[in-house]
Amino acid sequence: MNKNEAILVLGSRGLVGSAIVRELEKQGYTNILKPVREELDLLLQADTLDYFQTNKPKYVFLAAAKVGGIHANNTYRADFIFDNLTIQQNVFNAAFKTKVEKLLFLGSSCIYPKNCPQPIKEEFLLTGPLEPTNEPYAIAKIAGLKTAEAFKDQYGLNYSSVMPTNLYGENDNFHKVNSHVIPGLIARMEQAIKDNDSEFKVWGTGKPKREFLHVDDMANACIYLMQRSEELPSLINIGTGQDIEIGELARIIADKMGYKGTITFDSTKPDGTMRKLLDVSLLHSMGWHHKIDLNHGLDRAINFYRNNV
Image 1 (tube, rainbow, N blue to C red):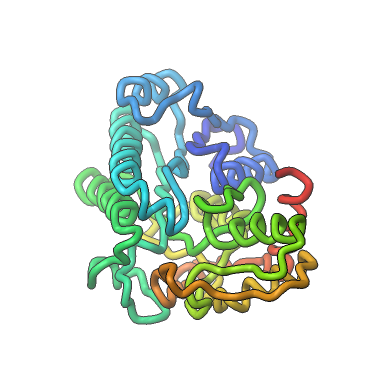
Image 2: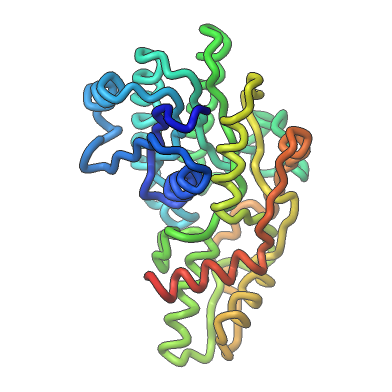
């Protein structure tokens, strides 16, 4: 990517999009398009196409999406499938009609079957039933990556998809209910400290294992892949190749934040998939490895929450 070429980051105020913008700026890119919803509503097809025709981006990072944790995915099922399908189709339509040179679609590891062999290889897609709590979101993301793949197959376009593991970091959604596990634990733990609660409840049994990647590493990986001159594979997992039990994660966060109470587990709440560890051997073979370990990344996330949220 030439430093002066127009690079469009969709979802630039979100967790991943804002990290991609920061990393592009850090690397010296000067023509970064980062429209917010007030400037461009991706749910409107005509407005999306008009924006592409006016600004003529050469590279597109499609990080815009409606996202949330288990509670949000399971509660707002219609919103998650409809909004994400609409956003994706409008962007693919505009990118195709304006001859975008390279597009990277960001998906989610929840696209893989619930009872997938571990670690999860890219080839395991569509080999079994999905986790029911986030099935609508997962189906939308599968449709997005298959749309990118179909454009590549039919028209020879350089569209690819990356599937990140669980992400966390600066600019995350720290809502106490409608968030992913790390920001949710941090926000609720801080409240428990302020309220001097003697007990802190974690959803589920605490036994599920999850892999976590700091969002700055995710951004670096996305840009690394976009910079490569050869055609990318249709689907690439992005992660660390390491996971941790949710119960252990909660204890680490409690220790870092100074919570002195007892951590208990609410087994009446869903666990979701018991393990989701990505096989990142393809990404490693392309020369990229994560740099931010979980210990350092949690310190950064907690500091960000306490100083900014």
